[in-house]
Amino acid sequence: WERQGKWRLGRNFGLWLMNSGLSVGLVLPLTIACAALSMEFFAWRPVWWAGGWGLVFDLLALDFLIYWWHRINHEWRFLWRFHEIHHLDAWLDSTSALRFHFGEVALSALARGGVILLIGFPVDSVLVFEILILTAAIFHHSNLRLPGGLERWLSLLIITPSIHWVHHHAWRPDTDSNYGTMFSFWDRIFSTSSPSKRAMDLEIGVENEAEKGLLRLVLRPFLPRRTDGE
Image (cartoon, rainbow, N blue to C red; front, side, top):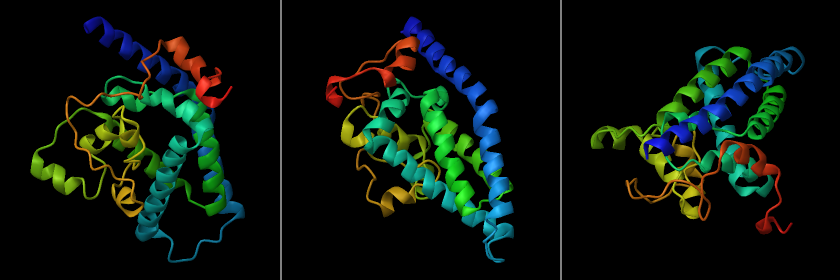
């Protein structure tokens, strides 16, 4: 187990290193540029959509959009090819929050940039959201167990480790549920909450698939598969 654990951490950090360069070179500049351009050329936001309440509205709107982006990453076969790399992790801890294929990171940046440009989210709202979303991802991918009372109350508002643990269950109906990233109520509103409860015997990963080596993880989205009819 210790050997497998070291290899697992190596895979997760290897993927993270690839994405770090992409984030600095593409994701962050593109996101900031789209936010700045939207305020320059698409400044249609009403006066009330500013200040503290405007920030709250922006955070809710951005999280709503992230919910749907996450959901279509599961529902659209092409996007799942990239997002599956995140789910192939056979265990769950905070390093899982860093484990994404560079293809998903790039596609996500393009989609997010386009939405930011069209809707007109200001730079400060986008930066606050990016900080919150990274913090939330590290938190809910951790294998922390919260006290029962705290879990019940927090889970009404935000995604907790127990909620997201079920999302990483290798049983496909659970994998395709609990899509929320920061706020938990989107899943209740759109009927994608899983009734399953976190348990240590839940198998983590992708149904009928085993974890892969780092090179295989990088290449996997581009390889033909029988299930794709190829």
